[in-house]
Image (cartoon, rainbow, N blue to C red; front, side, top):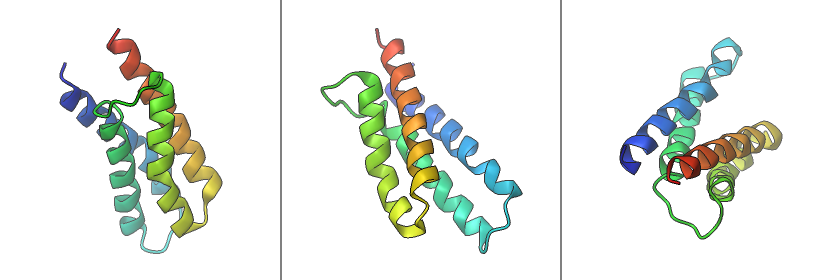
Length: 102
């Protein structure tokens, strides 16, 4: 499977997984928050398989996910959940993609 397809699948999966808990939260402008969260996580999932950094796959995923998550964490002030879930997702996606390419 091409890196583009892997990125699309990883991005869709990570985006959907991220917004599922938001369906059960009371948030002002929930649809806007969900759209922002989905697009941010989609970008992370898409970029990890399509970016070549000179580190192990899980480290690449961690670096990309943290760099992409920091702006959202700063804007919302929710550093723990945003950076934590971003880091876990980035590590998992980076590990899976690196195992696939071996």
